[in-house]
Image 1: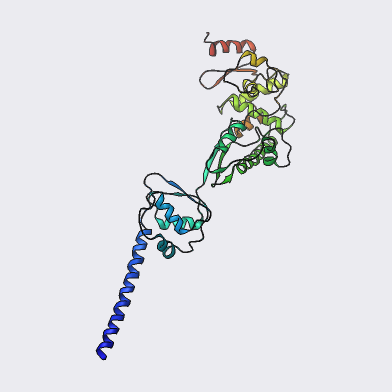
Image 2: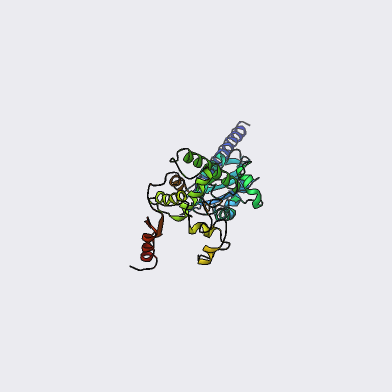
Length: 339
């Protein structure tokens, strides 16, 4: 009996040792698996976690997308290796080259989603911005009638048009953010910029309210892209307004042409529209584009000049003139190739 007891005891100890070794080996192997880099080679990869997904379904999706090639039991990994597998934040995450499964899980557990960016470019119109936002893969599209968009963005404020009232900038967001939220941020930013510039404006400007300065800034934005010219272009239009001369701005006229084909004709210049500054006095009724902060500042602080005219010089800049005679000579030289 003594020998049998010793044999059973040794057998029991051996079984415990073997079981312990198996557990340790399993734990070691599992740790090796989760510390192995994902199959992300040269460029980061976006990975979307849908609402309701748990650790097991995340692992399965990684395998389906070729980001995890091991055929291990995903249920075991999900339940034994990852703590709190039910707490996952839905969203889009960016996987980096060399990132391990453990690091990815830490990223998921912390909800560190990928932050997208969209750049709303100065000088473009509301229509162009809406097209960009509506086509973005990770923004919720706007589901509003055009006539309700102003109230949705500006609140109870009465706005003639959203044109010009949104700030050009780069906006960051997470996946599934409503595009309307981006526009609300752009509106709030432009309001801050406009009020700040209006408070700091030069004296004796021919504007009665900030909105008129905003309209002028949009014209400046469309007339020149050179930072060193904005205040000079501003001075030309201010000089014209002060003397009762029409602005005669091609960009304003183009804005008022439906389905403009890129060819501004004499017939267009004779056409009577609210934006044809060859036919109307003063400013057009609304901005014609989204002006940058630089153009707002130029409208608020025009250079002191005697210029009333300018013409493109063919290299991205303009030649400015005091008189119509000087201007005609510049037009002949730079536009018609006549010396």
